[in-house]
Image (cartoon, rainbow, N blue to C red; front, top):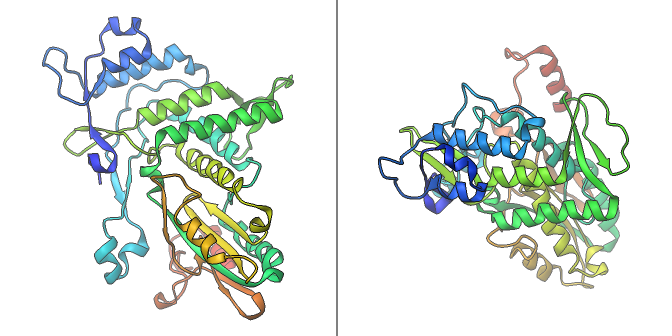
Length: 388
């Protein structure tokens, strides 16, 4: 899971000497991070990399948003997360057990607090995106989306549905496309809505707010992060995704969205939505009226109408070939009849039956704790209501 073919590369660090602080950051970086072992007199380690990060942090003045944490910080040991659908069935496991997700947690990252703030800002920007995209914010919106699909498509022909996954969305997405998508999204917000920054509250329960040139006052306990800094911090996160193997080897993620980074969900949501908007501009209005789609991260549910008035089979082939999502991204079949926490079934007369995702062979809803478990009563009451 962690090799050069999957976008990870063994990395060697040089010593962080005082003279490197006098160099431009890009030049200093070339003298700090290498793909080959360094001579013994210039060989550094992870501590030198952390000192270089601290230099960048101070130079960029990011400490006005959050402190650079010293002490018990460094690089976490990665792990692999397997999808239940790829391993619970023996026959499926034979071919798909290798499709685990490499996760590189950043719980020890010295910039963790800053990444938490910018991650919330990017997620807020994704939630607030306008235009023709497929974003769905959470699983609770799925039943409403299905009702919307029935209203829009029931009279246009026989109702059909496909469930798709964006294969390797996180590890395969090209960094150049991520940068351009996020930059273009912020530029559009500047141009069309006169927005300049996001104010992130200190409490997770409170919502972020937009900041414009005309904003006079910002509520207390909010950190205002301008778009330019959001882009620079995003770029740093993309280029400095490091993890440490069990033997102490430093590995750098050279391709894709950093797994385990708080900025990653927002990057994924916005970049995929930007691609969807680009694709939607290539479709005529009649085609747009014959389908409706939603995506959560890399999971997609699309309803469409079967009708002799348009070639729905060709449309689906174009979509499945990923005319929508730019290479190297591609689509694969998802679990038919299931999207997030909702199972659905198209019935006669273009009806759609829905119910909470469950696994009857295990005697109930296997994703939730049994009421007799040691989970809190408040949680079990919520689960009981959800299952009923």
